[in-house]
Amino acid sequence: MKSLLAFLLILGMTKAPQWQLNMEQAKTEAKTNHKLILLNFSGSDWCGPCIKLKKEVFESDVFLTYADKNLVLVRADFPRSKKNQLSQQQTTHNESLAERYNPEGQFPLTVLIDDSGKELTHWVGYPATLTAQSLVNQIDAQHVAAH
Image 1 (cartoon, one colour):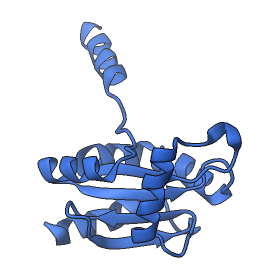
Image 2 (tube, rainbow, N blue to C red; image 1 turned 180 degrees about the vertical axis):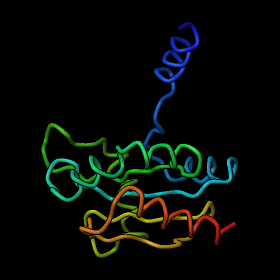
Image 3 (tube, rainbow, N blue to C red; image 1 turned 120 degrees about the vertical axis):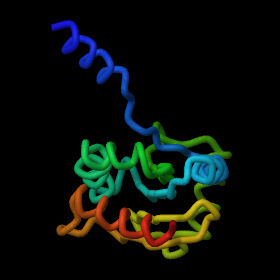
């Protein structure tokens, strides 16, 4: 019984990987920990496929478990509602990321990047065939190729 309680306590303390907002910090972390960067362009309060992708894939146990060990997560959000507006500094940063990685303004757009900032591959939209497991498999194939 004590071991079950200890396991549940440890499980409760384990936190999911956090989505970062700064690409330079993400590159540093990726280099240090030998991880790839997954950059997600999202319209968190207006883009239906963005919201669905976040809920069904990015918040799934399969994805979170994989991401914790292999990815640095970065979100570039472009909310429209006044109550969700980002700071001017964050908006400028996200726009800079969009200029480099999302010049066509596609939402959602998910980009896999190495620790030097080079794009390895990307996914446009939320294809019906995309699942958390299929995304993990695709990222893992790129991860093996990159290292």
